[in-house]
Structure formats: C-alpha cells, structure tokens
Image 1: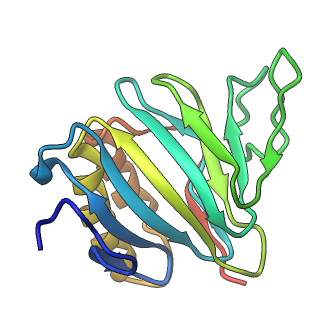
Image 2 (image 1 turned 90 degrees about the horizontal axis):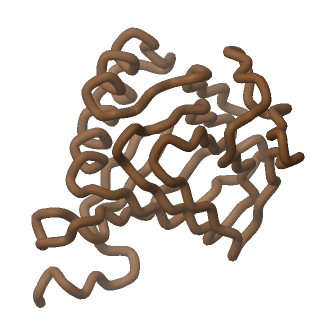
Length: 172
C-alpha cells in the first residue's frame, strides 16, 4: 500500500507518558504540511507560545481541552488560563468537533485539565519542522518523569517555538 492512504490506527507512533504522537502526513511524502494525531494525557499543558514562521491547526476528536489563540491584554509568565484579549476573547473549554487555527505570530496554547485523555488532529506548516520537534521532544520526555525545562527551551529555540509560559505536566 502506498503511504498516501493511512488506515485508522496506523502511522509512525512516538509515545511517552506525557504525549503520544502519530505521524499521518509528512514532508517525506511530499507534503508542505505535517499532520499528526496527538493524544494529550490528563495534566499536560503545552504552555502559551508563538511561532514567527509557522501556522497550526488543531481539531478536537475526543476529550475537552482548554484552547487559547489570541494576543492577550497582558502576557503573564506563569499562566495563560485567565488571559483575555482587548476584544474580550478568553480561553475556550473545547470539545469534539471544535477547532483552532493559529496564524504565525499568534500566542496559543492547549492543556488537558480533565481526568481523561484528549485526542486531536494537529496540522503544522511548514513540514517537516514539527516532525523533527516531536522526534526530539519524545527523547526528552522519555528520559524521566519530570519535564527538563532547560532541554525543552533549547529544543524550542531551534524549532521556532517562542515560549510565553512554561510547558507543564502534572499527572492526575
């Protein structure tokens, strides 16, 4: 079978207790976007961040993540959950069928504050930047129970991920 049709449950899987990523469409297939199925465990917060050159799209398949995609009135360094935009936008508690588009430069975040996994379809442009990012972050996540903030920062610096608040994992 060609790699242009990916059956349900198939694709290259990178898994740790902090995140599971299944590659669905990659730059190696000739795509300008990377598409992944991502499972976000309870207690995972990617942290608010932005990208100078990348665009992203998230589609919730299962679960209820909190989603943020706007420039806040004030960027507080410790938490994005109470941010508000000048237009009154606030964090959305999303569900299946909800989606989030993130243009370049837009602060955004997601977290799973529930006790059940969240499953999302995630698209990133340009390929293969996020493919390489996921390959490397899985190595950092697999190295221990806690998140190595310095290693994460070094990785993010190399892949156009500009953190505003820290990535956190507080298992439930």
